[in-house]
Length: 209
Image 1 (cartoon, rainbow, N blue to C red):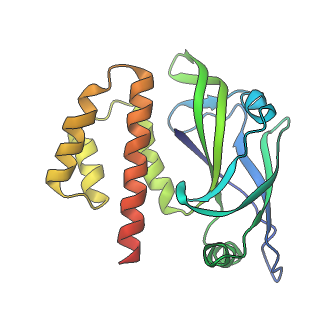
Image 2 (cartoon, rainbow, N blue to C red; image 1 turned 90 degrees about the vertical axis):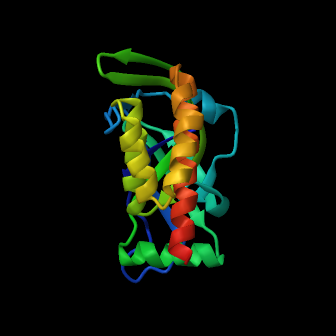
């Protein structure tokens, strides 16, 4: 699964204590830092399928934090609105939104049809799986996804893993077990998504200590 982040505005600002949020999960025609651009209508078939798109906290499948009530594609991109749950996590999210500590959404999707135009990958069709409310530090982790567009060396990847809390031994094991197998783009995308998930879980563990 791939991820793509964008800032959004919530209805939970000022003195408003509501739980509704809205914004854009993806903007069509916008080239991200990894060289990807989601084309208009890329999610149309996925949305028509009726698959329920999850609202997660930091792409963590163990931490749903609400429900997306409406997801539509308009001339700008993927417009979303939803309700944050009255759970412990939901209350934390609302507090962070009100304080302005978080302001980004990130979509989790699988590319179905794409083509390269120079250094840019145009995504024409994708399956939308989840839309996460994410914290600013997640932007730093998401940068690792740019290895799909820029050749990251093993040494660079090891440094990223160790900076995220992995021991040198664990980092080298992860690289030797998966990095060398990145022979095809699809395999590379899947492997890098797994690495991002591992980094995210590791970061959450470190924050809870």
